[in-house]
Image 1 (cartoon, rainbow, N blue to C red):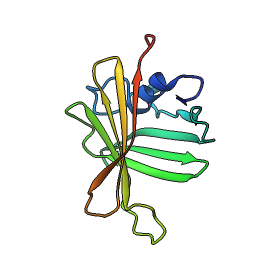
Image 2 (cartoon, one colour):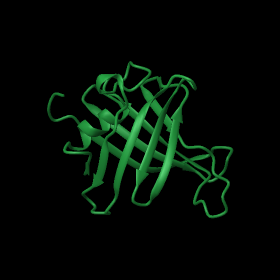
Image 3 (cartoon, rainbow, N blue to C red):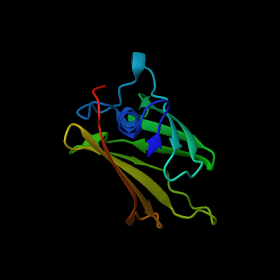
Length: 143
């Protein structure tokens, strides 16, 4: 289970990518940026994170800043939602100590009350994706 702020996994992850999947951009309160927090409860990994997610009108794409107790990362999506999936991809890292060249999150809402998140990594800059984590959340109450 993941806890984001005072919410549970389903609600908070839906906020993270935008509640309305038909929208090309996440909807943030008051037209600003979403700023959820995350804490892994089961298993208790001690993972804590703060996210800043929004739309960059100059670059014309979604951006995400992820600051956590293990490091920090950025992700972007130039395409937004495509065929019911939002893909947020990190920049390519060519550092010799990097465990992979890039990673990405794929978010989908199928059906309306079910949300999935897949984390994938590529060891090469040519993007050969390998499946990592897969989370499935079901909304247990209306937002």
